[in-house]
Amino acid sequence: MKVAIAQINSSSDKQKNLDLIQRNVADAAEQGARLVVFPEATMVPFGSNLADAAGELDGPFTQRVRELAAEAGVVVAVGMFRPGSGGRVINTLFVTGVDGAGERVEAHYDKIHLFDAFGHKESEAVVPGDALVAVNIDGVTVGLTICYDVRFPALYTSLARAGADVIVCSISWGSGEGKVEQLQLLGRARALDATAFVVGCDQADTAVTGAESTPGSPNGVGHSFVAGPDGNMIASAGSDVELLVVDLDLDAVAPAREKLPVLQNSRLEGENRVRVM
Image (cartoon, rainbow, N blue to C red; front, side, top):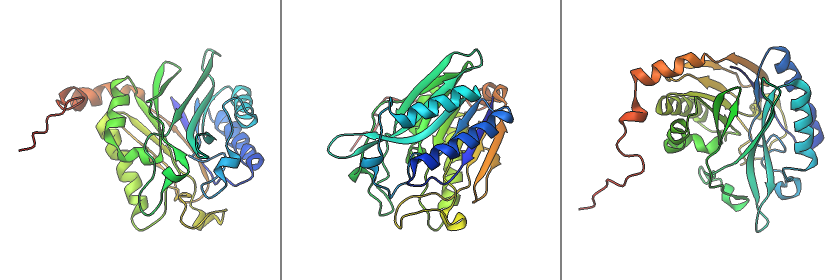
């Protein structure tokens, strides 16, 4: 499976962001990609008025993404916001397009783990999701995660146990000392945990691109990546805007799981073995 990682900077102008999606989807399709992944908050960046920007799954933003994916004959994963409760929004990864047989593919995942860390409080503006989601693309099970989720191994092992050979992480990473190193280390670790490919797509680094950003908001550091089921870094972007196209050798997953059967060997999944003495 060939995947494209569209490392972009979104802005508060949704139409400009749709234009970015259009250009990157077209370029990715020309290079033979079957799945095109965009960052978290592609609809609008953190620091925008998320409640005003949020849209439903049948709204104009998602409908345009559906059209672009169908026109290009690919599957597209885009970070967006949907209306939530109490004036908050839902942080969603929206997946749409057509598979190799021309059949429609559509799913969405609502971010479970909210970024209440490093002085940020995502839960003040975002309602957490509660369901794990994977989608079938050309016979490949692809798990869906968003940003801070990458710090939680159980989510990745659960997706792998459900059959995911590829796990996407749509990202808008917070900047700071050591944060780039943490991002790529976590991606490699989750790939080892799940013995699966982990495809991480971050927003480009606004400090490098000069794009719109809000102090204190996680607006991206770049360095999107693909980690293999053996934990090795297969491909990595820089800090700037970039379209990274990578061919995943899915035949590598089964041997990795045979050699390192951590999913089978774990005796802790779903059990509470802690004895408080």
